[in-house]
Structure formats: structure tokens, C-alpha cells
Length: 306
Image (cartoon, rainbow, N blue to C red):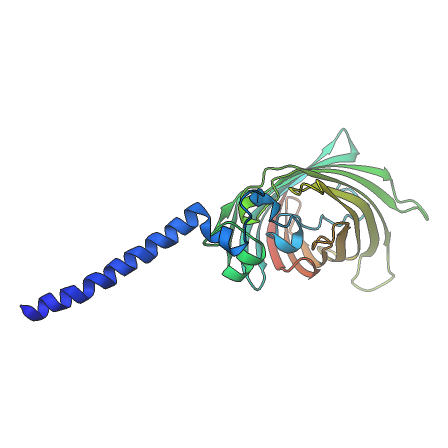
């Protein structure tokens, strides 16, 4: 009996210590005292002034490099549904991806709408603190931003003239979890002008080759008092190899912001597009960030032609 009582006395302090540790972790995660100490909060400056609104210090879907367009416009509408995986040293993110394209008024005008319905992420402590995130456990789910694009085919390829396409694009503030550095919680817009020309090689299995380039102007709002928006030069170029039912795309794209806070991302994209028939297609896209975009990404998607 004495032995049992002695054992019980030894267990109680250990259980009490465990409860206190758990309570301390929960309180730290709720009242942000841990964040105040970690980032030396001065007691008056709003916490959002400590976050860095740039692609280098946020989640992969916060300020991605826009699509590099090839000067042409799809001839028919489609709906794309896919899954993304983004990988970096301290961040693992997965998300759904949806995109709808429909022609408007004529074959020379189209509307594109893209949206990330759900993002699931996990970051380590070092990445959390580097981004000054206020999410204690560094993991959770968020909603993505909604993008609207109006595409106008200004010039059709003819003789020496290339295809020329104008894009007018709007980024909404629908993304959530700004406190965790996942999305910017602010609107943005960009204009892009792309030109592309196709070439038909003689012989071989290659149906055609298309070269293209894009320039534009990208603007997004920030939470910074001294710099309420960031203006960036947008650019990109690529080459498409088209076979009978397969298309291989290789692209470089990025933008250069003027705040110099990790706001000049550059990415490489490799995309395989398989035309599976008159109503369906499949895409596999690989993306690697070289500058200010610390992610390697993979997307698998299916297209339903409308």
C-alpha cells in the first residue's frame, strides 16, 4: 500500500506539469504573446505592418506569377479542374484549382475565371517566424483568390504578322488567412500583351512549333502604410511543340516589383497537354521558382470542353 501511494505522488506532479505545458501552448496560440516577444512588437504598430507582402514571404498562391500567354485565344470554351502540390524547405501546400474559359460575343473575345476553392498547408517554425506569421501551429486551411480575365484577340496571325492578344485581369481579395501569410487580403490587377507565331516544319512527327513573348504591368495593394501598392513589370516567353494529340510547353515568366522586398519572382514552367478526344483533355504542369518564389510545384488537371 505504501509503495502505491509513493508511486501516485510521483505521477501527480508529472501529470500536472503536462497539463500546464498544454495550457501554456494553447494560451500562447490564442493571445499572441509568443508573437509579440518573437518579433519585438512595440505595443502600438498594427501587426499587419510586420508582415512582408511579397511572393518570397507568403504562401505559393498569394502572389503567383501570372499565366504566360501565347498571343492566341482558345477556339472553344472549357472547364479545368485540378490539384496542385507546392514544396519548399519549410512549407508543404496542397490545393484545388478550377478555371473556366468561355468565348464572349465573338471568337476574338473571351472570359477566363480561375479560383482556388481550398488550400491545405503546413509550415515549420523557422518558416513561420521568417514570414512573421501569427499562426502558432503553422498549419491550417484557407480560401484562395478569384481571378477574372478579359482576353481580346487584337490581331490574327497572317503572313509576317503574329497573333497579338490583350489581357485585362482582376485579382479579388477573397483569399483568407492573411495573418498566417497565406494570401494578401487585398485586390490587384494586371494588363498583359502577348504576341506569338506558329511555324510548320517539314517532315518528322512535329505538327507545328509556336514561339511567343509577353509583357505587361502588374499592380497589387499592400498593407504597408508607406507603400500602399506595389507596381511591377510583368514579362514572359515560351516555346510550344505541337504533335498530333500532345502539346509540350516550356516557359519562363516573372515580374519585377519596385519595393525590393522579395517581390521579383522568376519561374520556369513545363507543361504536357494531352488531347484525349473532342470533349476532354489532360494537363501535367511542373513549375520551379528560381528567384523570390521558393517553391517547386506540380499540377495535375483535366479539361472538359464546352
